[in-house]
Image 1 (tube, helix red, strand yellow):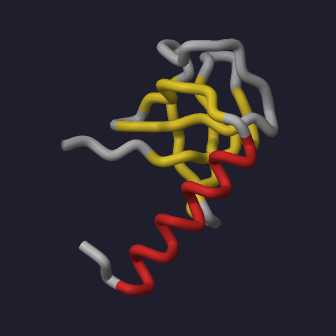
Image 2 (cartoon, one colour):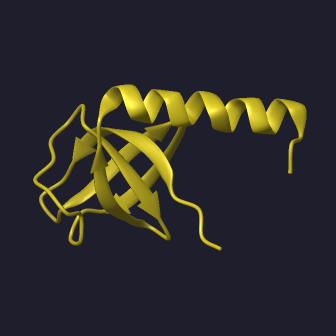
Image 3 (tube, helix red, strand yellow):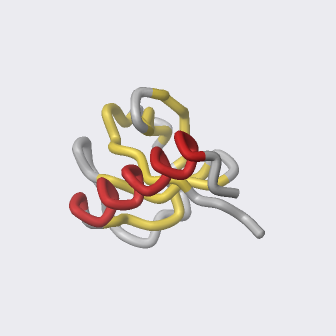
Length: 76
């Protein structure tokens, strides 16, 4: 099973590489295969260094809250 994490785009460079913020952790992801046009402030699902799907902000925040709950309660 693979996990993708939602992150907010905080910058995009000329090589189509974005820095995303996932609950305070910043990661570099490639935007070459994301399914829609994205811009700074958008949320994307990322996996293995790639943004793969643009996601609505409300849904992204809901998923991040769920992830935080799982980590805090060690429900796995």
